[in-house]
Length: 356
Image 1 (spheres, rainbow, N blue to C red):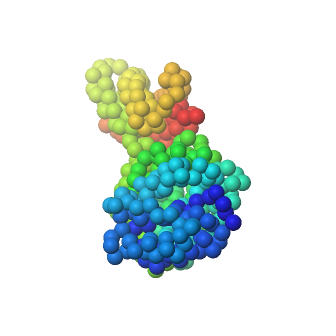
Image 2: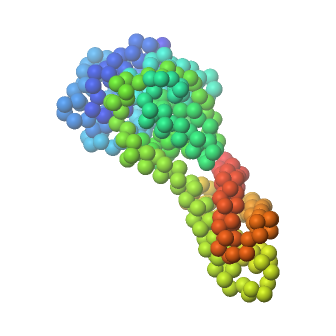
Image 3: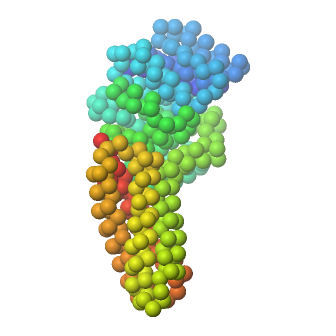
């Protein structure tokens, strides 16, 4: 028996698979199943009533009159648990189309209780039954998370996750109301150093995942829009840096040596772009609420190191490649700074603007 834990199943226009999912969870020993009807039409809303009538003491149905999105449905359930289940140990979120088995839900809950951490149920995407769009989407997103956001997760698309009661309030404040919410969960626990762990689960795809309400173009745009927000500030800073570098070069007299002109222009351009980048990153990107002076000092140290690396590499390559054109020099600087961008971004996230 899994007392004091809740199984949360958000669903939109379900079929008979939702009944089987809820029934399986109850037969496994879960005694508190919370269904969220996320604005289902009349043709499908009766499925929730059927489940409630079959298991009146073990099922709760929460209703959105209109579709608000999977993320909002999960938040509604979290808020309900916080309000109505004060003794809860935590919850496990499950998709209602049969992709998540009761055994795997129990494994995630067991791991959550043991490790007191956010648990992610991870599938094996190398198996032949995995649809191509799911395999490709996960490979891309997994690598973006790892190399850009510093979060190592093997299954970024899974909806099977166990959340300790201590994190439920925290999860209600994570941005997003639709599929981007689950991506935001991962980004948030990574940026805030929330303990998390992965649990291998069965890889189940039904009818090639046709029942999924995930729309590749629309929802991928939302998901990658979230990730790109983290990089946008640095890209903007890079543009400011390059434009300032080119403009300053124009006004430096030609009688000054090429190396000196590059050093002067690069230094001034970096100071301008760094100031803009610090302000935007602190407020809009990382949401840093810590000591401004401390983060500014760390940022300055990083900026100086990055400046030295940029100037040194540009000067070295300019000499080795015998570059005399300002436009070619600017292009060379763009290549160097693009490489340094990835290093700088990770350091900013993990050290300069790291939230406690």
